[in-house]
Amino acid sequence: MNGCPADPIYLFPRKPSTMAEKKQARLTQQVQPENRFVQFYRETTAELRKVVWPTREQAQNLTVIVVIVVIAMAIFLGGIDAVLTAILEFLLVR
Image (cartoon, rainbow, N blue to C red):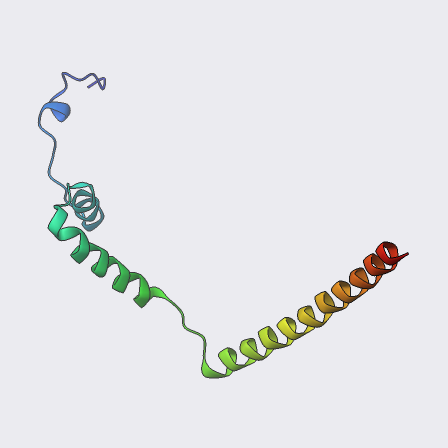
């Protein structure tokens, strides 16, 4: 067999034998319009099962970090705004 299209392997494709091949065959099949929502739901729930959720303590620590960073950025940006406002007022009033 030299891989040309006349080889029997191309004329009679073999059926998938392994689980991976069967799964790939299912994924490549045409999805009916009414089944798209069902497929989306199944794929979404499958992906959510793979998620490694943080512990309660990790979630609390990360929330505290986010709040601190948000407050620090608000103060920083507020300071920059106040300085630039003062500079512009000085330049425009002069």
